Length: 144
Image (cartoon, rainbow, N blue to C red; front, top):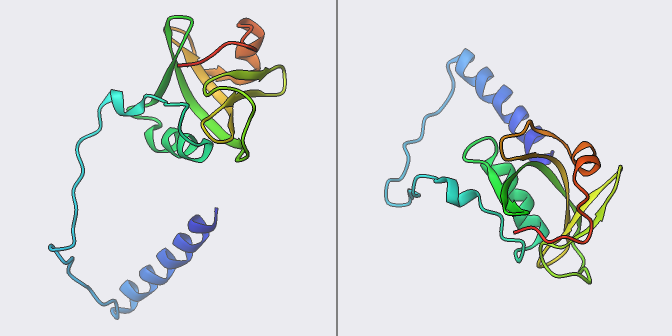
């Protein structure tokens, strides 16, 4: 949220400078530039031993492509939206679904827990977590 507001303000300022003809251009320092590898589907695999913040950021970064996934009952389960539920230690092993009801789908992480908001079972339509939980009893199961 904070960065979006800052970015919006900076964009308006940059457009004003361009319109006025007073924008200054700075070349990129090629000695400080870095490159990364191309993303693959495997980069979207969720490792629940990571922290809730890291997993949430991975889901945000990999959605829509290549997407984030885990394993559930021997099939791929795509996670399309989540949020950090807790950053505190949770008394469950990573990947353990410790709450799955009409309001929440909570999964333990290495540190903290995430709330899965939207997901998609292999060859099924994407749906919100509450609808998914109604079709698949998940509480007490382990993802990954």
